[in-house]
Length: 422
Image (cartoon, rainbow, N blue to C red; front, side):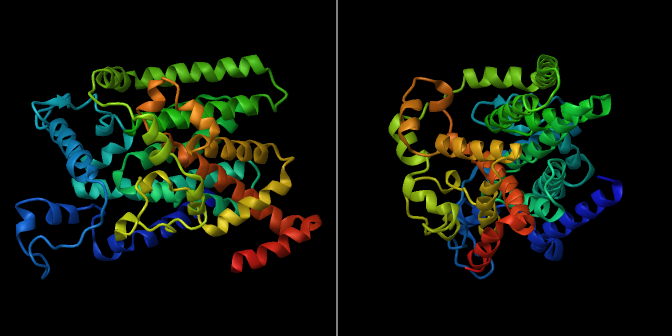
């Protein structure tokens, strides 16, 4: 992709993201859940705001993590660095708590530099803006690299950049910062499989470290495991020295984790000494995992309501059930099945199925999550749903190409029209 084409796609995604952020672009609003502060906390909720009676200011029924944890942690990190201090310790949580070792403080995340150029609220907004913006650009260049058409790549990139997983975790400014690097890592993998130079290697290590420093180690573990499996798959589809290629990528991972050691050594020490308890088996199977009857949320995300409008009625967490990539790209993803001979379609179709099995309640997970493995019992496996969304997004690009270009499959073309209209 030449510079002109890249500039055009960057302008396109800038425009699309500005539409999404129209309240910020046109009215200067900050994408921050400050409504929770004046509706739930004293002394603010004791006062009237915008004509509402004290304590009655409307707010979305969302988690308080951003307000109580993530934003204050970032504030403290910025304050300490500006004043020439190492952000090692947070004296304001209980009797004090580690700050640098806390992954979500994201002390070493490269894009944190925006906080030191602009005021914190502006830096916060820019990082939020960059989540769908960069995810869209990176997905587009990866889709083009694996021979999806221009318009198919647009569909794939928009569906991933604005998938339901990205949207529900959007304001956390951590999970989205991790997953935006996934398509870039895959793109650079494709480049490294055919051409190894220091520029591409440096970019790969930068993307690797950025994803690792972004603030969520579990999401990073899922992401980098997916990338590694993809690399192994692609190595075995090429007529090259397989052992040499594998050794090369393993060496890159060793360097990558070496770069991350400054965060992950103290971070995992903190985890080992944390008081967090494991989820019990019943909670994982009945509340965390996606139930068979909740699969309809793939087609209609708010079929059971939405926490933001306070009408989500299942007794579990909405944010763990966000499967949707949008109905139009979802329909196109189904048509990719007719192109099963394509190696990329095979890979992403297989992994979309495997990941769905991993995050849903079924006989396989009934056995898997009964095992005494701390990683499974102390975390939410549904956080890997972003990989499911990414696989479907890539398949939607292939499906679009199949529908619009395969002359021998006119049946799929005519079937797509009423389905999309419906």
